[in-house]
Length: 83
Image (cartoon, rainbow, N blue to C red; front, side, top):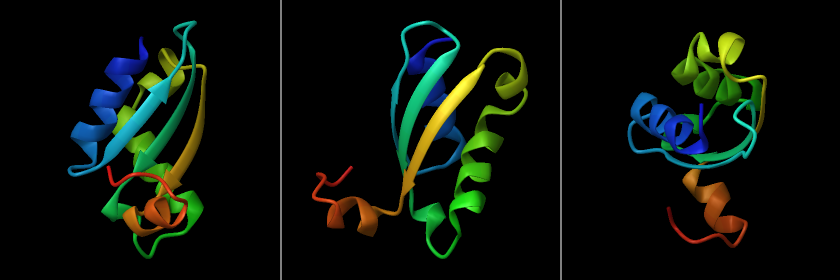
């Protein structure tokens, strides 16, 4: 498993989302995901949406995923460029 594959899975599973994924060892990754799908949802619900895009890979191929989620408004308020 690599960061680019995880990015693709997340973005395919959350249409319109933008994911930034890092990880060099093939099992431990960090991801920042910006999606309108997170609007009105709590942090746990947001993370569950991301985990759902990865399915069984979270048990079999990905050992750890450090995750930060943002709505587009939160992302811009944090001073980050529009995804």
